[in-house]
Length: 356
Image 1: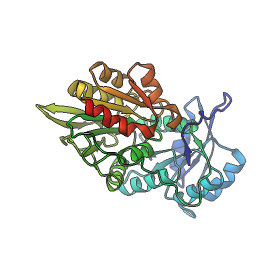
Image 2 (image 1 turned 45 degrees about the vertical axis):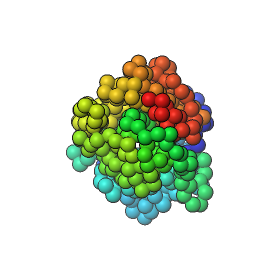
Image 3 (image 1 turned 135 degrees about the vertical axis):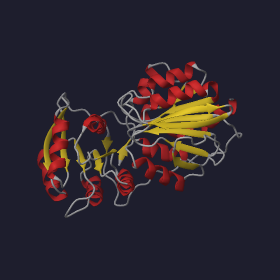
Image 4 (image 1 turned 30 degrees about the vertical axis):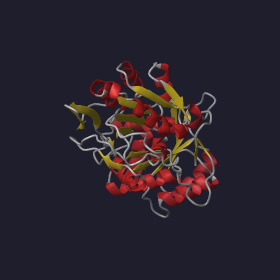
């Protein structure tokens, strides 16, 4: 179970010790080589299955695990459940790039995994994957975990709120590490007639589709993975698809999203900065922004631009964040009006929208 509000894990100035767990020898080699290139990371071992991983964990005491889901002898979810119950460690799930992989990876997050990402493709042109993998491992190393109960612990909704009045404002939200749980809690508390919402959560392709489908089943809002040209309307939340940037656009009084490819921005694709800057340009004073838990500084520059253009802005506070990186950077950049615990953010969003 991830514990928000704890101080980041410290490693006494030493490198972050990582154990790679994957049944493929080639994948183990690629992941180990790429992680070893980062001066802050030390790969202490690689295990082909959970049984060997169990012994290596006890012997090597890694700080972070990378974990495959589909493995022989014991599947990754079963291993993760046992690990979180008896020997909790920060885990980054490295799953296949398939829709089914997305569903399973989200189940892994429910069981306590900190981050999810895609395996490199058959060509092993690692490129962006290497940057993402190292960032996720370093983010995971800053997360405190504790033993989970025998049953999976679901993220409870914050309590369904009543919308103060129907609006056509735009709410923009950015999140990364810990954001899947934070977004579930936030969105499941909002009513069906909430303003249109656009979201960037740092997740790979296919995982965002599974994540959106899950949220749609839990929320009064309609939640979907964004497609190019989708309208931003009350009662709908659009999540940027993994591997693509999402921008707000406007035609007269109608807001739409544009989904496009392109290089990494702030080390991410989708990037919160890309979304926030477009909302600043096309919605301005008609927008509310919230930046949630996550490592790094993606969104800080865009939120400052939104505030400059008249938007109301919110940052999740340190105590309720899994990683207080992105909100901290947004605050430091001068782009934040309100710093609040996650539980208070839905009501504040609706309050600020009612003033627009």
